[in-house]
Amino acid sequence: MSYRQLALLAGLLSLHPGIPVAAEPDRPPVTVTTTRLEKLLFIPEYSAPATTVSLNDSRIDAETSGRILTVPVRVGDHIEQGQLLGELDCRSNRITQEKAGASVRSAQSRVAFAERQIKRSRSLKREQNISEELHNQRETDLETASEELAGLQSALEEARLEVERCRISAPFTGILLERLAGEGEWISRGQPLVRLIDSERLEVSAQVSVDRLASLEAASTFELVTNQGRFSLTPRRFVAFVDSRGRNREVRMDFSGPHALPGTTGRLVWRAGRGHVPADMPVRRNGRLGLILAEGDKARFLPLPHALEGHPVIVDLPADTLVVVEGRQTLKDGDTIRATEKEPSRR
Image (cartoon, rainbow, N blue to C red; front, side, top):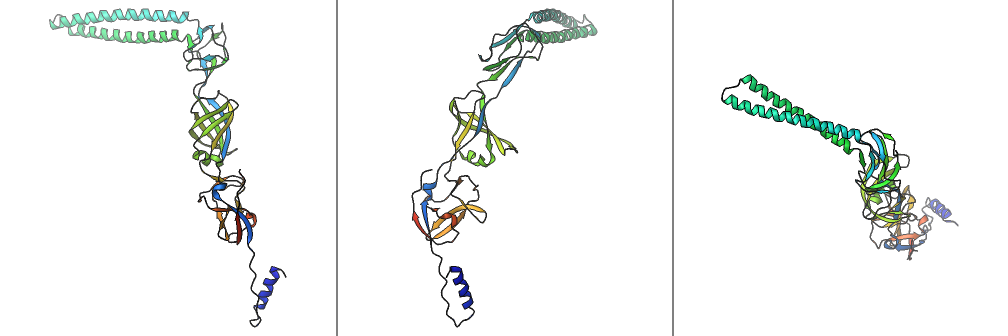
């Protein structure tokens, strides 16, 4: 007779107190194997796509107009900061500078004459040999000459800058990617001459799933793994934006030692800082994921609130906690078990 039939018979007989009823049979213990939690824990390694990006990818413009005399650099050249990228015909700029210089010298002479006049006027005023009106006029003449000189000196400085701008120099150390104008061409102010990418100020941009951010924040070591090798990194910024299509956040990292070439693609790799159990260990009970623990001869279901299907999960329990590893699929909280401890295979 089956267990269900015995239970039904016992219920019917209980309606007749005079008839003796047999005791309900106990459910037999479930045989399982367990292992200590410390033997299951491991430190998972995660990765995300990453690219080395330059902080400066610039088109270097001409700051004045003129015909290009020379562009002494080629695509692929390593360029040092301050190195000459191009030189323009600067004759008209130098003529403008010379004219501005002559105007300044003339204005300086007028200021010097006005200063002598005002000095003589003050001496005559003390002797009351000059009218107040004439004295005031000479003071005005000195102020006017001084203001004119200041304006002409500014024009001279601007003319000097225009001459300096005929030589186009690299604003940073980098790699020349393009020549955008050639020798003999006329180039206008603001027109690009070359394209230069910074080879020193680099960082890594990685797209990290929002599900992995917690493990990234808890990690202590980070590497960019490429076909050029492995490069140590340090976190700089978690960009405060989530890409709704891929549910990713951009993470920016700095190189903490040697760096990869600009544009290098690879994987950002990090290791979680705390022990995890393998992704296949949690079981689902009543819509929640958790572990089946062995407490004496009873099974206990421990929910893991942060567990995700198919992902390793952090477990904060004593290292000697017994976890059911075989036979857990059908167990429920409170089931009687007969447990034997087993060494798990290494993962």
